[in-house]
Image (tube, rainbow, N blue to C red; front, top):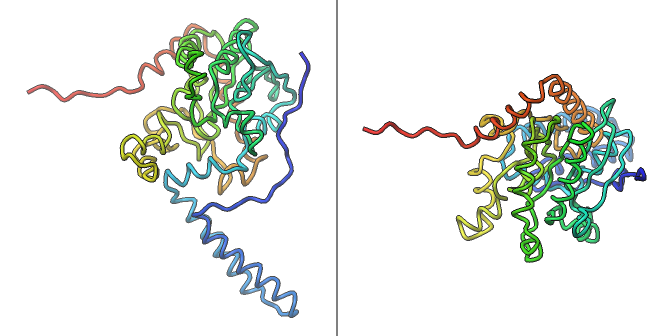
Length: 334
């Protein structure tokens, strides 16, 4: 196999503000005008400039401290949020991609291969979106086909054979629901992954980088530790899909996002995830390197802990972890 570089561009683009960030944008415009006026007229406006800077920081902290679930969805869908290949370029010292499922095709929505992160050698598998129309068509907008999950399973079996930990990076609105995917048995491909991931005798960590949509996410999400980026979500359905079913109108997506309890605080409280990974103020797109450094520290720490656990106990704990999801209490019969 040939070592290939990641495809992500690392140039620093202009970040488009989101709708709820408009108060910050307006204050920043005022700041730029004051700075320009001060320079043009050679007038000392340092006090006024300092006051605006303070207001910007206070407004930014207030907005991001009170984000709604729908606003967090907007953050994880920001076009400049780092994707799997961006993280791998920042996390790994080397990366050798593995292609194809040896049955049908090479699904570009799921990327994976051998990587070295810190001193740890591992198999890494991630879902990849595109940044423009051409790449989104190549990556199928981050929605994998059946062959993507079969490729992931091939890599996991390889990891099990060579005693390498498996690191999965989730970022998909869901598996591809098209006719071709159904003809090639998308449901069966995901179901087989769920079954097989319970049997691998190596540590498995899954990190939700952005969107964690339904079975498309769970197809590479059976893990000993499930991590979630601060603004990411993990849900049985997208807010728009939920709104279309329950309200018959996708415009109710904000209400659906609230009802789905899909954000980090909800998921941590329900023990659906094991740890929330902090992001820079404003989201991971505001600081790629900072986000990657934090993710790397959390991954390596959890991996070190898992490697100390006896393999039989590791598999038992993995099974029990997922069996406990969805527990409920029935009221006593009178």
